Every structure is written in C-alpha cells, then in structure tokens.
Length: 286
Image 1 (cartoon, rainbow, N blue to C red):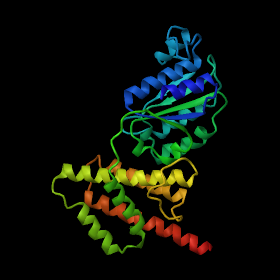
Image 2 (image 1 turned 90 degrees about the vertical axis):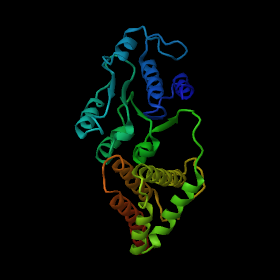
Image 3 (image 1 turned 90 degrees about the horizontal axis):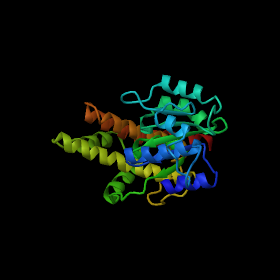
Image 4 (image 1 turned 45 degrees about the vertical axis):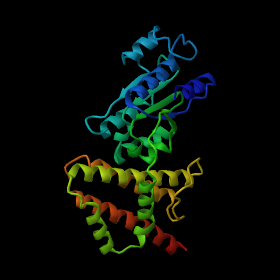
C-alpha cells in the first residue's frame, strides 16, 4: 500500500480521492504518513520528517489543512458531512494540499454518501480525500467508484466457492421464482436453532452476494475484474449498486436484535423484485 502511495508522491500524480482497505490500525498509520508527507516541509524519501511544524501540527490534528473525521457512534451524520463539504470549499492556507481523512468509511450510509458524492468526485483544486475502511463488504459501491482504491497486501482467506455458487444461483434464479418459493427458501435459511451459527451463516451468504455483485460491477464498468459468475446483461450498474446496498443493509441489521426470518424474507424478495422491475422497464422501452 505504501509503495503505491509513495509512487504517487514521487511522480506528483496525486488522486483527488483515495479509498484504502486493510487492517484498521495499519491503514490509519499509512494514511497518516501519506497525509503528512503531502505537506511536509522537509520530506525524506517521500516520507514525512515528523519534525517540521506542518508534521507536528498534523500529527496533533491541529494543522489547518488537515482534518480527520470519525463516525459518531455507529454512523456518520448528515451534519458532519455538510460541515465537511463546507470546509472543503476553502483553498489550502498553509500547506500544499487540504487533506480530509474519513476513518471507517463503511459507516457512510446512503444519505451521507449521496451528500458527499459530488464533492468527492469534483473537489476543489489541491484538495483530496482519504477514506479508510477495514470492511470492503460494507463500503458502498458509489463511494468506491469515485476513489482510487488501494488494498493492504495481506494474506487473505481463500474464497469459499460453494458460497459463491450459492449466491450466484440466488441472483440468477430468484427473479424467475414464485413468492411461495421465496417463503420456503427463507424458512430453510432460518431453520438453524443455534442463533450464533445462524447469524454466521447468513453473514457468510451476504458476503458471497456482495462478492458476486462486486465482480459484476467491475465488469460492467470495464474495469479489471474477475469474470467468473457473470450475471445477465439486465443486471446493469445501477441495479448492481442497488442490490449491493440492500445486501449491506441486511448485514448491518444482522448486528442488532432483529427478526432474522423477516430480514431474510425481505432480502430474498428484494433480490427477486428489483431485477424483474429492471427487465420489465427494458422490455417496455424495447
């Protein structure tokens, strides 16, 4: 991760927005080094000296051109994002760049993310955003599409292809299924008596769904992406993003004391109805 950021510094090819994925503390440290290096008065091999005025104030979160935002409890608030947008409209006062770092970017919900999108996509000159996340499965696709994504190089767990096959089968077959089948399937998924095991199984399924949707989003956008498990053309980028958001909402709700059977039933119905509506609209236009 640092090598890619260091290369951007060396080539003076700084993106307007970065999304850094990886273990929370390691990514935060790397992002801090990058943020300080952008305005350091005496960088050494593109790393911040941490002794100059800009570095010291930046590390203390007292530098006028460097702001760190953190979610309030479980999510970012619209008040926070509106203030961020307002602050980002000013040019750098002391440094070369104005830098805004958002920790736990996966806690941007639909409302706060939508409010931020235009500013994230078209910031003022010499202004950049650093978004950090330890949870790729819960970060909105709309945010990802507007950032340069860099992932921490760690040994990841192998993909469970059985889960991917199950998720792919759901996405392909549910639009053609009956309501009765949805209810039967929901009962199958929630028949586990052990609540902990049930929750883990559902989380794994949702992660499989987001993986399939992520691959298809990249493919539809013409970006490098694994081409396994491709969905029909009716799954356009807008539909994929909507389904991504719905699956991630389900993941969020699983963290709380919710009616699991109702949650699964609603998710399956959404996976059935949204593609049907998209296909119906396409046929009407044709």
